[in-house]
Length: 421
Image (cartoon, rainbow, N blue to C red):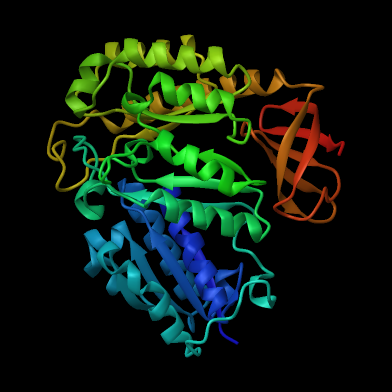
């Protein structure tokens, strides 16, 4: 039986697509292999949001070529859409399928493996090695915005939403198959439903999908702060089946830089939103994507950003050094010196680590609900609803299951606890 290793780069939408492909390939009779150096086929789902993402994809493909020269590599994703010729010439690459051809990914991989088109029913051995402990469900794709730094809308196209009934049916199926956490993913998740007729919203989707997903809980991927209104906040706060974890695509907190980025909203509206989320969900993890070193970012701009993060109720930030991409409005604009960008990114990551540590210490001695994401000897790892990874000293339960964990020790890079139920 042929084996396939799946390697994913980038956003939660990419993770959801890779999850679906792994599911479909298992159903076609392929074996999922964790190690790319021991797999017959390696499926690479690429990202091209930054230059570093491009380099990471190329590095992986070259590593596979060196360590597993017999493997055949299939590359898909946004990098494959933007620059297929850069990937096609790399060793071992058998096929390059951009986003416009992603519907052919499963057939291409199955064809290389020479497997029968017969589908194996779920519940058989084909599903015994789940690709992930948590399920990823893509409910939206594409983006109608044109932020100056972002190439993704030109690669994935305009916003397109999965009809709520279809999304609910998928969630019901995932819950029935034993998944106890479902991550709802999208390129611009908060814009969900704007393209549907009649026009719907993310709140409408959550109302539709919540009951269908039970007993699984839901976790949301990144949300545009401009589209998070009071009604959505109220639903997130009131529904215990939605994880207490909100991640916002802020990008910056200097109003001048935000205007240059082509972003809607500003620092005051961001501050109000984060404050309201913290007030109504005091135990929630509140995170944000931040771009540092955008074209023209001054010392004052950065200091404003740093002060905003420090004063806010954010519990962590993901920091991305600005990477100009061809075809975007920011391409060709003057660059902030690399050394300055590196120093600023380091300062924000240090601040994020400090805030994350303070957040986790708030839960010492408390019991939290968590999903088992790794279960093996001599220990296991669980993920709480408010996004704290906790190491426990023994297999808590099978992967995917929900347990209760008591937080016993919090270190700068590690949280330890014990399962109490």
